[in-house]
Amino acid sequence: MNADKRISVLLADDHMILREGLKKLLEAEHDITVVGEASTGREAVTMTRNLRPDVIVMDIAMPLLNGLEATRQIRHADPAARIVILSAHSDDAYVESATAAGAAGYLIKQTSAHFLSEAIREIMKGNTFRSPAVSKRTQKRRQESLDREGLLKRNVARLSSRETEVIQLIAEGEANKQIAAELGISIKTVEKHRDHVMRKLDIHDTAGLTRYAIANGIIECDVRLTLV
Image 1 (cartoon, helix red, strand yellow):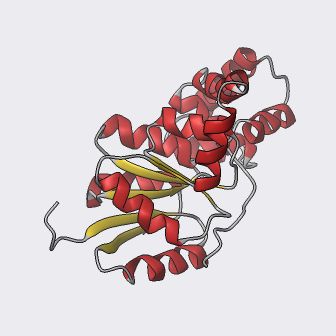
Image 2 (cartoon, one colour):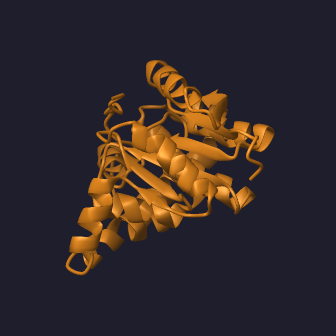
């Protein structure tokens, strides 16, 4: 990279106050600039296509399209895209799912925020980066936790991209009519997706789909990155 060129970053998080804090933090660095902000996963996919940032900083818990699915779609469109995932979860299963989706970096939201700029620089060099606590624990426990690491990835992989979008919107409380409008499909198609997902996962009600979405990282609880 040209030494005079700043690393362009897209911030994708649904909390404006967090985006503002991260933007202030990153733009204090001499070699990084924030070129865009997305509040949903779908916006992140569109803005990445339009802005072509060097690095995307992607929260997992976002409306409309979660960060893992947004990462998959971005990487499918551009395999060279560089993405750092932010997550409330440090479990190896989530880390492996993010890696499988194509993310080069993984930071837990309890990590001191100065690691974010370090992660961005390492990813620009073609390296990977994980929060120190995640990296240390993964190295120590990888062998005994192989089965647990693979469980989430296998479960999510059973769903198509469209099915993942539908199950997220269902779990977020959207009605079939709202889901159809959001995705640009018919209500009948939404119902078919819902029925197919339920049969595929052997789930029989909306509450079960919501529990599945939470357990598999399609939606998650909000925990903010500590800006220290």
